[in-house]
Image (cartoon, rainbow, N blue to C red; front, side, top):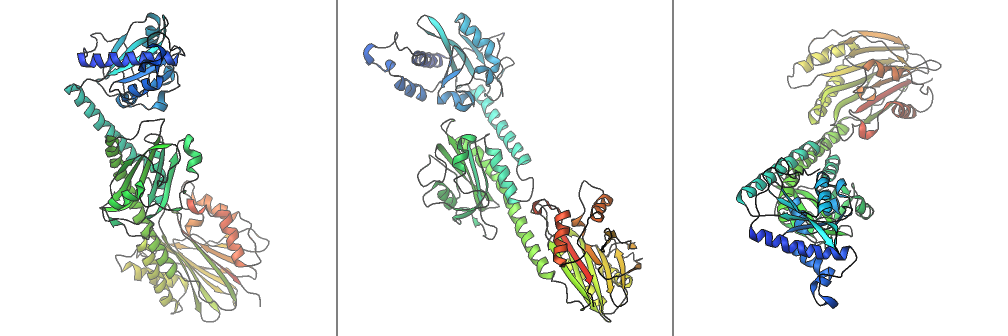
Length: 590
């Protein structure tokens, strides 16, 4: 962020007499304040403290209220003072300048001019917005005057005065600049806020976008997922769920004492947040004892997060004395930002609700494996995907067959959400019906394919069937596009069994085959879905090799075996991109 400075060929447009009079008066006051800043109050003011010129605090009060932007630099060209009008006119914050060398601030391009003013004491004036004037973020059309600050016969610094005439052409330029800044802000917000359908991530993105660009403090609170939002202006629940918080380093310790993301918060009656919730309007105020904000916050802006006519939460912004207070114009601009962010948050809340419904439905439908024969031990596990993904259609089933046999099934419906969970229940129901006919595995798949393909709304699914027959010492397996099962045997590496693979169910193509494999005492068969091994940036063969390389326990509790598999292969819950279903079977010793 830099200004552009230079000598203009034609010179700036002359200032009006009123503007020059105000500037001259402000410059004179600034010069007097500069005398106190340099540590010597003699020469130029009334003796004995009889006038305001001898009182530096009164000088600061007068300059603070002046309509002309004024700033002071010392002889080392470090910023020593700037009034509110200066920050308003330039768009800079006090923290951007005070105590810093001009070369390390937005005025780095003016170093040549400032040094010449120090050297020859001649004032120089330039306009912003032109090829040689100050550039963004200063609005175009402003004239900046640099004047030597003299004390005790020598130049001790530079007075910087911003001349701001109410010129219609310039006002139009400034209005266009404000519109451009608004669009740029909203475009940047669109890119950085709402990159996922996770409420916590979206809230964090909103807080990070606001600090330090727009505020020194930002908190984002939304209604809990189970609470139905009220219409704007009809009041809202006072209990909110914090999903984002960010502060500049100076407020970091104080922010840690406030509710953190993931915790609930209830705003006190009479607070700015409570008033914003009740009326659904922005509240711009100075913090009071009832407001939940860190000490040192001097300006508070609470914005309602409303989407589709309903109030879903609050965005609270705060600033310290290091920067200017929020203005009504800023409140309007930030209100547009809040509205844009509210839509992203509402989408995430809706998604979380639908994901919760799908997960509950899937858990209700995905019952524990049925009671096997006494000659077989079973265990199963289901893990939903991380919060950034939706619930999938993974499923498993076991069916007792005659003569001590047990049918094991593992499937994965393509797609996600409630529809996939519903289709999963259709597959399981059809499988149970067909298994009752005591068909071999490949014929069960063929019949399943015919039933599902006749339903145009059904989604395809992969499926692996394994018939355990401990009495005959045999596994009989058939696959419809599913990953191979893993056989775990004592004294041997994990083996991925070769199973003839046909097309997924629901395609109507058929062509399923079966194969047999010896079932020996102590063996364990593991069936799983692709969420266990598949990674986005990895070839599936490499993923399967990782499974085959595992040294898994061949004795002990089957749940401990599942724990070992998940510990070795499953990604962290928050990073999981797909759900995981596991089914493991081991023949019992007679």
